Image 1: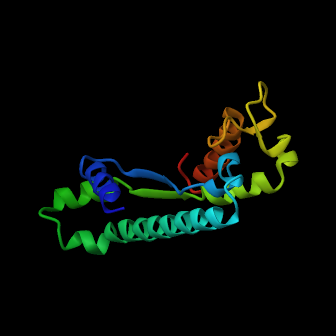
Image 2 (image 1 turned 45 degrees about the horizontal axis):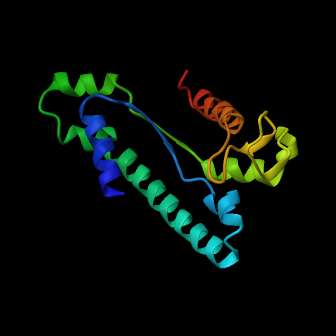
Image 3 (image 1 turned 135 degrees about the horizontal axis):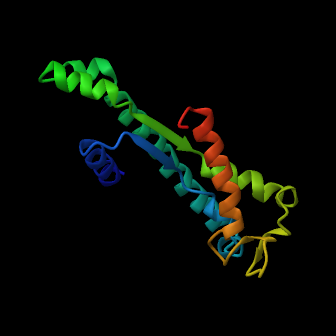
Length: 155
């Protein structure tokens, strides 16, 4: 996680001010892992939850690091201060786990035939293969990401 946020910091340092973070989806619910049995699924679920918690905490730390009060102490000139203030840092977090869970719990509401069917030649499968969502699943997720960004004033 530290290496991940070192990269985020590098992006910030070169002027990137809009960040969208997506947590891990419930990989224990993929067709590949459903057949692994409940013990392995529970271990995978715990690992994903630990990662997602750590990610959420790091996002919060990153966000708190770039508040105006912190920056005032590090500003070398009024010009750089005003430049920073005009560059609004916006951080968004999309809960991929919640999205996948909602769709997999009620696939018919999204016109998917089943939460485990794979390799469909049309838009009725949530899963493209044993572990990856289909293009159609990505489209539904993209709509929700766009709604999040819109609600939070990205556009």
